[in-house]
Picture 1 (tube, chains in turn green, blue):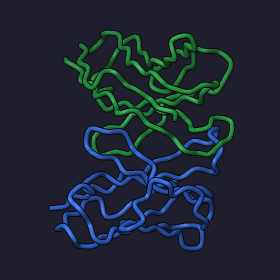
Picture 2 (cartoon, rainbow over the protein chains, first blue to last red):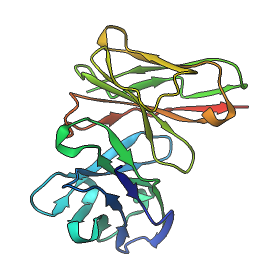
Picture 3 (tube, rainbow over the protein chains, first blue to last red):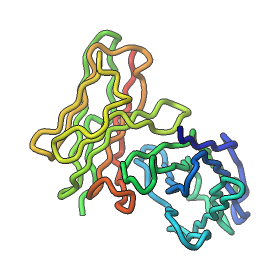
Length: 116
Length: 115
């Protein structure tokens, strides 16, 4: 069965510092991968997604992620973190990929705290 | 464009009581999802509708949970009777259709506390 692991439950970074959130997936074929952000009291918002092609994908709010098949990873990065980036971040994989079930399998999330 | 609307935002009930949540998806979206997000975990899909038909309810505890999507627009999720372990945020999402290329838009959720 497909699964997603986010090894870091909680990360604290200083404002202006770089950020990398880790995500590992389990799937035999090329996965469809997503990163979502959830601010307190808000629904989830899509940051970026990967289906195929260029392994470095750009998203909204200055985020990017890199797909590495050899490491089964899809880590999220941002060069300079802003205080408003404090939130919970979820990595997800699309079940069945190209079969287009629409079903997302989420990791357990990483809470990002930003120090002034 | 209006987003996905959910109500109520918060609900506190005692175990064995019943509760219902309502979701109004984005206009024109054929696919509607209900997720359960337990504290400290990622969202888990409970049920997926395509128009007014159920596509996937494999993770819905059918002995106590039920859901419907009247006329392929609004949807309600009901729990009867509630258990302590049902305490969670219930998220509704919608998308144009099931293809992963179409973004799922999430509502703000309903936070349920079962005492």
